[in-house]
Image (tube, rainbow, N blue to C red; front, side):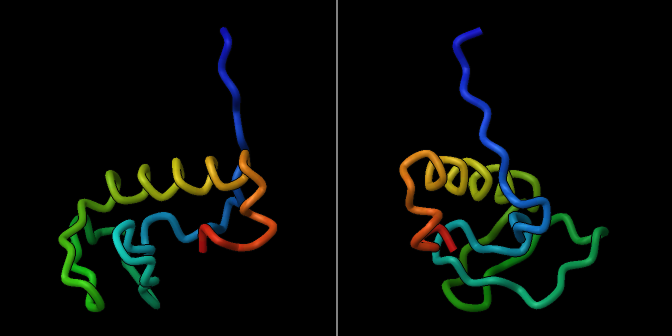
Length: 72
């Protein structure tokens, strides 16, 4: 239907990565639905944050930036 599908690594830490500054938490339990980035202080809803990170990673792959690891 005129869409492009991009596959990202299944182990990409989309829930644990701060979509504002890129900080990655060492661990995040599945029961934790909200968290605050210890680096920049941004408050995150786990699922919304993951969706933003997945979108950014997909765009990075489409532009070729994934080879440079810019999205990480």
